Length: 139
Image 1 (cartoon, rainbow, N blue to C red):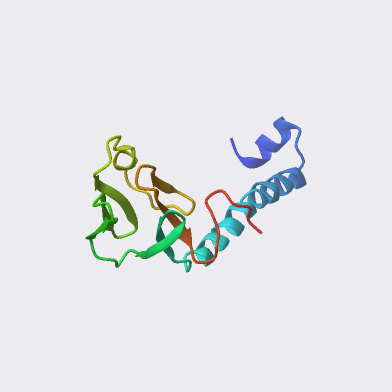
Image 2: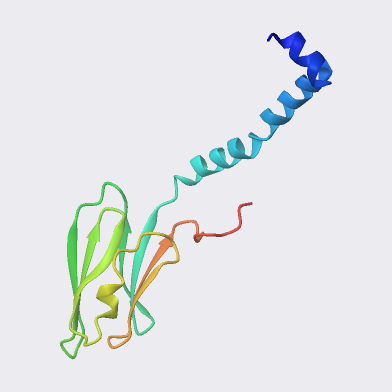
């Protein structure tokens, strides 16, 4: 069956196919726009901020070229948290607290994600350099 036979049998006029093709191509416009915006946002850098009792103690850069290392935070009472940084993610590997919820939290890497150790009053939060968070509104 050729195109002319299909057009005659389908009750569609030739311009209907052209309009349909334009609408299909236009439906991909948002995908292209959001892809361009995502490419621009790739220049954002991320860091993990370590706070104890509300005071910032240390900042850990999170990037693809960051080496794997650990950092041990020990407070005045001798309680400790062993923090592990691996490229673009961070976690608490060991802690001297009883509940171990901070250890069970696992890896975090997206802006706005946190790890909290309540017995030690310790918070680790991932922040973006532009202040954006996951799920924020796109302007």
